[in-house]
Image (cartoon, rainbow, N blue to C red; front, side):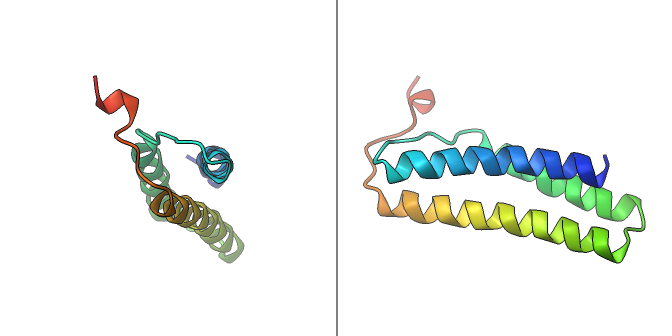
Amino acid sequence: MTLRDLEALAKGVVSTLQVSQALLMAGRQICLSGLEIQVQDVCSRAASVASASLLASSERASMRLILLALRSEIDTVTALLQAQEATGPCPSMTS
């Protein structure tokens, strides 16, 4: 996996989190089951990219920014979820 692949993967997760944020701000309930696996995948692949090659300083900085952006979106959605009153488990968890 290259740094560009990692960036694309992380951007996909960030997009999911941004849509989730918009839905939460609109008062909607959301279900993020499976997102943890996607975030773990990004982190695992970032570690793999970092250890598999000697990244230039600019590439390390780029990877750091990618992961910080992901963390920021996670923190925002987490705060919104904590502020929202719980109405029960995700539908996928009740079957």
